[in-house]
Image (tube, rainbow, N blue to C red; front, top):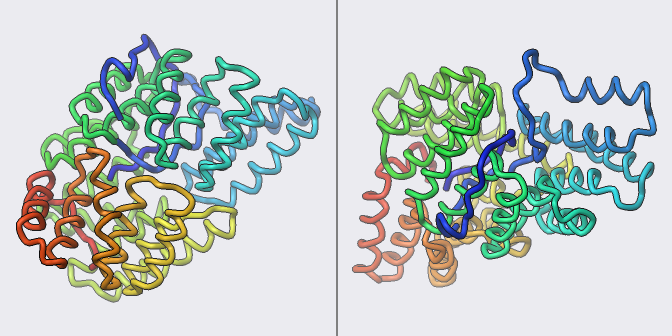
Length: 417
């Protein structure tokens, strides 16, 4: 499945999710929730907030803005040590204004989403909208939390309210993700194109192009994905997501050296557990086993840093355990994550971990749960098919394996099995 990290920017006319479609996901949850416009000279929001607080240390709203800025820095730099700083800034804001402080609640919700504590993020967002039912930032946090919890109707409702209150790139991107989760890829692509039209900065344009490229990639359209990634990098050469997309296309086209070079830079610039596992997989497929193991060691360290900074991510933990050949640990991680949230990605991860642990009968209902949203995911279909084949359900299993290949023949690129 795609991962969505929303860069929220100012937008234009509204479009109702209920009119354009239903709901699927890009699932890297967005940290930033405050719409911004492109400035003539880039300004570090952390430095700006800190300067303001030197002059007015009791400015509770700026403390909340500082918290959000730290969450965003953690996302951009893949450095979760920013999250405790965000937590402290939000706490200071609440100390200064304990009641009716929607800004601090939104900041806490954004931080909880970044740490994958989606239940807490949902609580913070609901508290914020009770203070102000027109708080678009609160609805953005709520939409992300409900999506990751697997509450699809509630997620769609939150996205719809966001579209109503503040249409624009942030709302369109979340609407696109919502549509994709229900398998409405054409509608999701159309809405992301509207988001692109609303983008007014290099980062915003790059973000939209990355999402459009990922939609094309997951539909097996290498040429379309390449066009989007190339156009995006022309607008924002600093985008890690676009470079990662370009790396996947290069590897799928057989240009392995180019793909490895791009992935090496991605892993250096944004050493997340997910990217490091992907890089290790491509190294493994290229016969570079020693280098692949080194990247898995780095992925282990990245995952540990994330958890010690207050994050919880059994999805990444399960994938890392499988990549390291430990299916029992993968099952334990995925089970724990499933208890926290019932997103289709988690159902798929648990099914696949159970399969590798030799528990296909137990895996099958989770594999069906993953595909049951209608999402057009080659990964979901392949995993379901392999599990069915292992259970002797030959016709159904082969049909799903074939469907996965038709959906995206490159979906398993670089996967360590």
